[in-house]
Image (cartoon, rainbow, N blue to C red; front, side, top):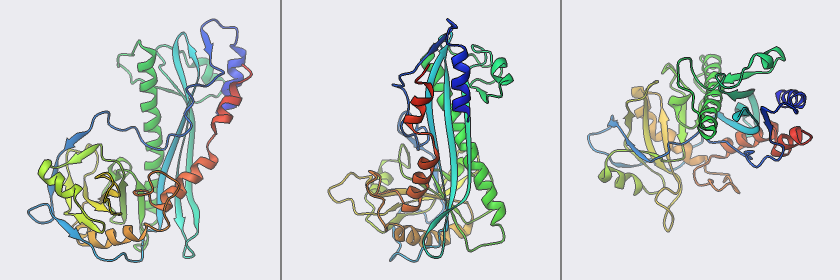
Length: 334
């Protein structure tokens, strides 16, 4: 386990004046299940692909869900030391696809994880760590200007951790697509943007669920229509444009009534692969998602937007990830 190996390595360096060891982990992250969000809310480009005007579409009563597989990831970080005042960040990342059986029980279809140290090689020489078999990642690409501020280096390391997590999720999504290519009866739900983990539009049966709304589509008048959706209504389907990776078709769906609540309460955005069939299936997919409202994902504060199978993925990942107690214990004797 990298955590223990690196702790042993630091014990050997305890008298090195260049190494500042942190054995009271005020900066340990208890939970990091969500990808880094855009710092500022923004409006992004979109193009209607259903109708000529954004509308509220009643989707009908919930239908038996055909959603069978669910993908989510986790990341946990710990700052065990500064090396010549440059931070070396430890990170555990993992992703899982959980499968729901005919008896409604959940089991693991596939899981992947990674443990690495993240720091700028320009400031910390990784050669000795490599010789000890420690996995280390340079947080700066060749030719990039390396920050001088330790806080900026930590931010850069966290972004590299997030990319590692995304790579694990993408790898599992590709495995699922390849494995289930001949089985049109199964569906994969990705927690988050579909375009972040799927790099080809070769399969219809994959959707992404976005629970936060830092990025908003359309102008204010159309936003009013979106935020006024009633429970069981969706917006018209639109194309998400300007993405570096594959495009997506998308629509908003209100899962729960928001009377007396925030305008975003119970509101999710669905992403699906950009096929004509996606438009035809938007109502069906929405009815499946409405069926996924039960059981509620309590006591999670995001229960109004969090499907229970995705919460199950999170719970599983938390059970295998190093806890804060483990992170602190590994370095407590230094």
